[in-house]
Length: 171
Length: 110
Image (cartoon, rainbow over all chains, first blue to last red; front, side, top):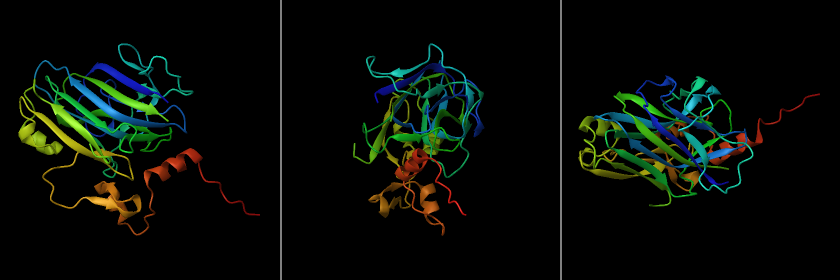
């Protein structure tokens, strides 16, 4: 399928301990069906804070998936990068809020990618070789640590306003 | 960029940057996370859990790899699991297969 872009234009990923995340402090992504695979190949975060703000964002997996995600609304977006692309049969679920937000996996045996930067003028970008096996992969919609990816902040520093772009592909 | 690696770029050219202790906590080199600096580092993806990690450049302990995965890098957590006596080798592709096939069929006994 075509590359997709999940874009959150402005939010504060408030620093918090592992567990159920507060609404509006995260950006989460999961597959639309049990057999879909999502491959995240690039994450670009742009700092928008108006004063120095150490923002310890991390890309992690959910140990308990969000329940009843709130439909994504403008100015946020999630769509194919190529406007003429064939739309996937089952669309992935991109969210910034839910009736019960995702639980960021507290297991030490579940990897997470540390994306710490200063949101006052800072930019951070993580990318892999396109199509390589190094991309961040999640699969299905099961309530395990494999299905949902969440961008939020570790309980360090004092997070500032950021914009987030997550480039991914549905297989 | 090598085949097994990703790349992280942290641009503080227009930012006060990170305090040294925060940069060290994140596993970055503090010298390149100050005001006006750009820090670029490889990232490595675990063959077993597909989690990506930023390697700590100050680490002196060996990193792990899996001989059954063509000596691809595996993270510390998965390396620990490999040491457990009841461990069954489960690369990420196998996990994907399990999820896509659904639960295994149960045996029926007469």
